[in-house]
Amino acid sequence: MFKRWLAVSTLLGLILAAGTGLAEQTYRLRLAETWGPNYPIFGDTTKSLAAMVDKMSGGRLKITIDSANKHKAPFGVFEMVKAGQYDMGHSASYYWKGKDPNTLYFTNMPFSMTAPEQLSWFYYGGGLELMQKVYARHGLLSFPGGNTGSQMGGWFRKEINSVADLEGLKMRIPGFAGEVLARLGAKPTNIPPGELYTALERNTIDALEWVGPALDLRMGFHKIAPYYYTGWHEPSAELQFLVNKRSWDKLPADLQEILRVAMRAAAYDMYAMSYYQSAMSWATIKKEYPDVQVKTFPKDVLAALRKANDELLAEFAAADPMAKEIIDSQREYLAKARAWTAISDQAYLNSISEMNE
Image (cartoon, rainbow, N blue to C red; front, side):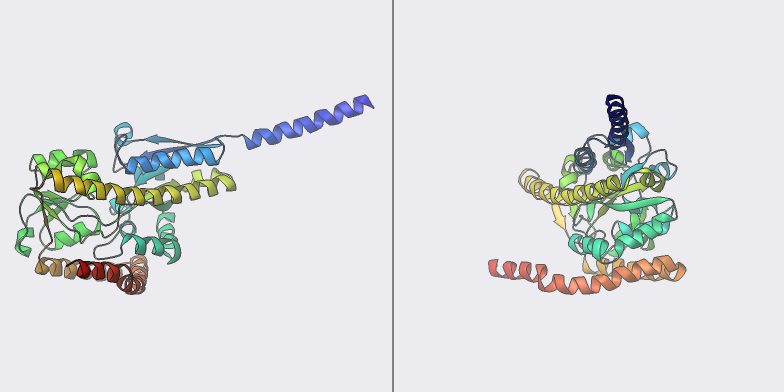
């Protein structure tokens, strides 16, 4: 009897041990980010993601982050994740227009959606499904990775008074906005974040847009270019978490869900952090750097930019069915969302502004 009990106990112990071993298996993912080490807000987002998945999974899922100083390829994140050199990436979708022009639309578009409008399009208006459709061609998954909110139009050495002032303008500006400015004679370029100040200081470029006060103040652009223009090109800017599809498929279903939820939480927290930091940084700029001049582009310049934008959208849509599907989706959703924005947030702000006059 004892021998039988011992045999059964041993068998149960082996089964439990095997089960425990499975439960405690550790999965490790490597993430490459476009940003430098400890880069504020953007870098905080990847650290937040890693901490959340570790805690939520009880240590079963761990993410190691390599910043641009380690992998040496800030604009190589797409290829590194696609090739499986890294399991994940944190960057911006519009950086990959040379790899696939349809990635342009998922960061933000000129004259397009604000952050609340864009986030609702992603999660409830079909945007996320369209993004996955584009990235599936490359063996990748892409998820919203944190929003900066409305971005400023950039820092300029010289004031922009007419469309003619854009002719030959060397400006760091990525994405579709760069295509728009090129249509009007400017010379857009993309430069890694760590090289922006030097490029402006050495006259490699005449102007640049980065994000907004939250990140611009610490970069020191105001020391070189005194004109700070309000935005038109990115009324919202959503970063991305890239995931190699093979790496994703190796994860158990519960860890996939933990990763999915953690990415969404980290992305939302970045939006809140960006808004807060921009408010605080703008207060500092007003107090400590009164020579900074906030400007809005003249109406004829904005009209020319809008016309060029619409022409390019029509050309892209005519040339590529996938582009047309995305553009149509964004346009149709924006028409409905903006009608609501007009009688909610915009009406409220207008009313308060008029009351305070």
